[in-house]
Length: 292
Length: 166
Ligand SMILES: Cc1cc2nc3c(=O)[nH]c(=O)nc-3n(C[C@H](O)[C@H](O)[C@H](O)COP(=O)(O)OP(=O)(O)OC[C@H]3O[C@@H](n4cnc5c(N)ncnc54)[C@H](O)[C@@H]3O)c2cc1C
Ligand code: FES
Ligand code: FES
Image (cartoon, rainbow over all chains, first blue to last red; front, side):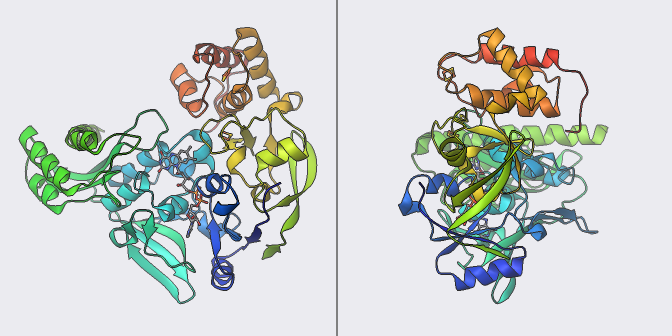
């Protein structure tokens, strides 16, 4: 028989915040796809109290504002994001990443809020939030905070939210009309965490790069972005030498670790190759988009 | 807001039958199915979400029973491998696994069958690649997967063709 755990099921964000603020060591339960796996390892890994976000309807929708900003509730599942029509062009990278998280059954339950709060450097969403310049919306006892993704992920499995705060939504700003985006994930086997991943959002005009944002996953404690690599690509036609230079700059900025998915050296070898593949796919998408 | 005590009465439907079970906050659906309801067809391979042996359907969608807390599935409709009598698609998949010889030790089989059922419920005539993708989270240490894919394709060929949404 499992150890007893207090279980709260608030119906609103305000109620959830009230429980988090008043019950010591209470912990949010989203899809449980990371948390319950941990709890199954034994009583030591069981929080004394769980605040299930499952019945808070306010956290479950995806909406688009008139300016094109897409707002995704924290409890929106990977499965729902992977099927949403609202992620096209510069935001297609969001849908693409969601569709390659784990396996179908885990995508049914796992949520975007749970994934980013866990902040596993090998997870897929963190790099995507950086590449799309997303903002994380957080509610706590003192109100609402909007945290740019770059300030949200602070270290290995560490975010900038407080224990009595909860993530309520992620907002993705509208991309330029001609933007394309790509998620490229290198894994040992389908459904595994990334050995290295690249999230890229690109805007091309007549084959020239107008703007670009690149973020690497699994290449350090938080997603890696290198402004110099992006500057190297802007106003070029993304020739082989441009991409090679940018790849080198990204490798200098990356600090991957040896782990079961590969050695640090191996990951550094992957970065420029995956970048090349990502840019090529983005160019193909831009062409296909113009033809349509 | 419902503030649950340490032990709570949770009710859900399993294979068409309403069930009421007293559960704790850390108890998983897998544990309830096997230990409380004695439905041992759903297997525990890893208890970590990795192997897929515990896959069941929750409101028609595949989930890992080992990663779903029982309190979270309160009010939901669960289908397990024992539900062949109540679900026609599941029954067709089971028959196809038997006829194809897609079972060796059998430990992965119920999870495979439930993942395949989830796919065929929303897409009765998938291509081979779609079958592979849907079963990608179910590990089998015995068969080499070929007969399992054959079994799902056979089941699909026996289902009436009508595409539902997604
Ligand atoms: C076998 C397996 C393979 C996987 N493969 C991948 C993969 O390839 N790529 C990938 O990215 N992920 C992968 N995952 C992780 C998966 O995406 C999880 O769904 C995700 O990491 C956690 O989301 P969740 O909704 O299940 O959160 P939970 O497990 O419920 O919660 C995770 C943590 O976040 C906290 N939390 C949750 N929601 C909030 C909130 N709104 N506000 C504040 N805190 C919150 C919880 O307290 C907990 O600490 C895998 C998981 C498994 C089991
Ligand atoms: S027992 Fe649930 S996935 Fe292995
Ligand atoms: S038949 Fe033995 S694990 Fe699949």
